[in-house]
Length: 189
Image 1: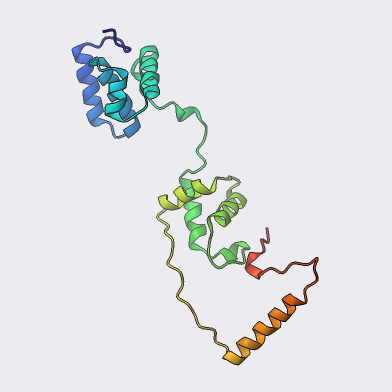
Image 2: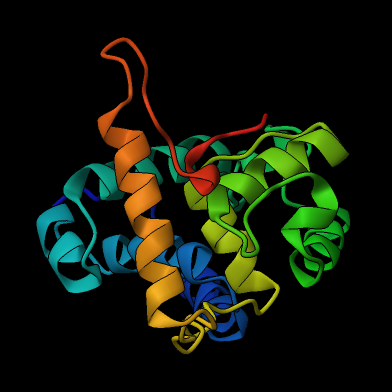
């Protein structure tokens, strides 16, 4: 049976196995294992099943190995440009998260991911997706805080009822073409 990777000598296979053992990058290790499995004359389907990757991945890795040798196994994303979420960005994010949102012009007392994305864009000029912000927060060790314990209203029951009645009356008397918002629902940016 003809293999889809070039024939490797026993020494080449041994060297590749040694490289696999030392490799700390899981994706690169998988690509090496694909080549080794194909070199041992496993079919692409068997290789894909054993390594839990798609057959397309197996064929792609084999093609790159045939064309470029071991260099074809290395991740080719190094030419994608500068990473948005570098150490400098994460350091600034750490400082921003440690501060109060009100110090940055927000009305809320706690951060949301969307607010962090906007604040970091204003400070650094780099916009990232909200999902990327979640990964950034995880990398700096930020965690969701527990909700603050409920605080009872300091007003007397009578004063509280009076204020609520005034608010309800204001809302009921609101003209049809006007809308009422709570203060924390309005985006000031």
